Length: 299
Image 1 (cartoon, one colour):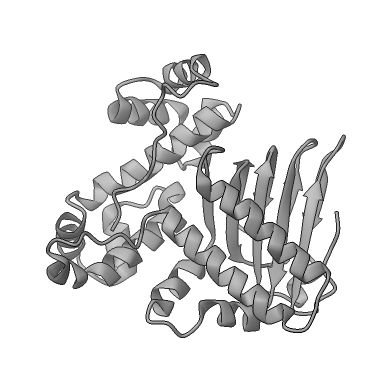
Image 2 (cartoon, rainbow, N blue to C red; image 1 turned 120 degrees about the vertical axis):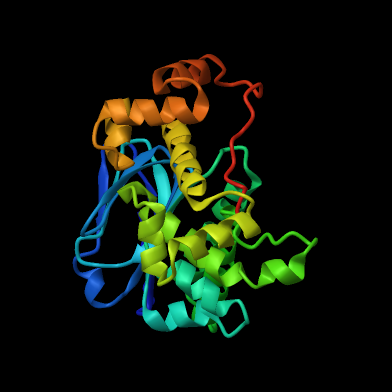
């Protein structure tokens, strides 16, 4: 593991051999306000003051930094960590027209998992390598370069949840709701594991449920409750396919009150139980017969 000498930015590459490694932020939280963990391969647990998330690489976690933030990386795993202050964060957001939406997206805890075959994972590998190289051997303009790399990282992360796809047909009428649907999407990313209802999201946005329903149907063609359920089922599928976590543990991570509630939810959405889905996924591991699931219904 190596670290960066820059005062406004710290970056490190982690390669665990025979034992678990822990990257803790208790002292770093006094100097920095933001963190990114990128798990290239293996397994890790990312912890913050109010939650923990089990990651199976390739996976990315971004969020505000506090003294309880830490990453526990399992033996045989590899990845990167970044810690940085508000000035670099502000430079990364920039002054473009999309900056307001990008800031809203970045001002929360976010998690994304990727398929190994996904070209995005390969781009992230290269990007984190460049960020770490720039941070560990600083030169003239290194912090400017790092801000630019972070902006690219945020945009790639943003695109990974398809938030910026607006259909060309009827674009004028759809654009009117783009800000609201992005706000809803951001909130879903942050809170779907807490099992918020559509009414809860409407309250958080300061609009009525009817208004939220109209926005979702007009922009995406689906009611908000269905979009929330689809986000949860996508995450459940990823965890069942990519980790050895029990269905009980996955149910708890996704905010279900019991494994039976999770089983009922999963079967109602997919037509099969979590166990049956995992057995089928294991049987087809190593082949391309099973289509990769994506979460692509968002504008």
